[in-house]
Image 1: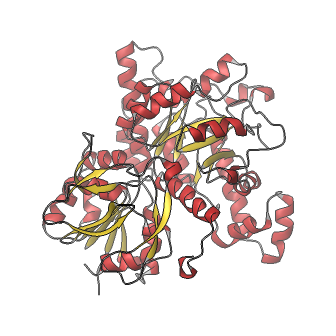
Image 2: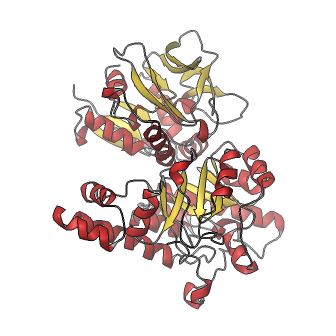
Length: 311
Length: 190
């Protein structure tokens, strides 16, 4: 490192990219669709917001092609808050990513929630100054994204359902894959790298450290403080909450709905902090009003799943 | 020197500070994560890490840690804030009505160097540390309007990025993200 005074430009950027992900640890990142929601999120204690035109639940309901949000809308949210602002581009859509970088968003989510733009290639994330987060369902998928330059991995879960079952499955899969690599002999790593279709060097890092090379966050279906606490106990380092906050309290009047959503947002932030303290969680979970109704993932058709997008 | 160093673990890169403290030779018994006022009572000095100042300020207030830190600071406990930590310790924050601990007589300007795409690394020199070192700035703040008791320890790109007031230290950058332990050593000697 600095001892020889020679750090390549690319490596420097890498440390700064992963560095921002480090700063977001132990927090909650919330999906917001307008400046008002962004302010509710910031006031509740979100560490960052994801600016998008429709939350995943609405994308799911509306169908059609889901694309990057309007820059005007993203700028509006940037102006409303002081915390980092993230935005989504379609898988493989590097022109959308270039636009988001030009807008100076703090993180780009190359997201399966939007309609993929490339059937084979994800964005070459090394080519960007802005850091990227990508979804994954397994260690192999996570390491392929890291190889392309992702500075943060999140479980995919099944976005827009309010059903945490897939996020749990993906987190358990990634962590059990990691334990398997960690417990293997060094001379077995070559075959593991082949089997999980990931670069050997990254498999070796996992073997040595027992962790992904970048922070490991969780997303997709988190709707309650208990959901967030479970993901943190399972090993997530931060949680994304998409539709879970601003699709909650749907039947209430405008002012009651905002009050209830704001309460839920605060409660999820507190639940991440005290994820291992059941007494505090019981207090935190009290009287939050109706949660998002949600959709059972089991009731979805294979073709309706978002998590299977990306390769 | 037998002492226990606390790292505020409300949110942020506290685990990186723990790693740096271990690199300084501290054992796990000498390092303690601090989320609650009770946990603060067992430590002799405190590091407030990088993270989001709005989130951490709010949670520190909600669960009583803010007040407990202020009391310990008055009693002379050494405290060091990196990036977000320095913002939280400031007297006030430029253009924002945001809670702070008021432990350092400075105004903090958040994101003084710009958004994430303008984050950078640069070699800097710091008073009290012999050799220049590589400093990592991530959405970093700067210190402005220093009170009379506050000393500037380092500047970068014409901005004040390290300050000290008695046993209270603030840095805009993140020594915990590098293998450099000099700034941690400096703090441990305060």
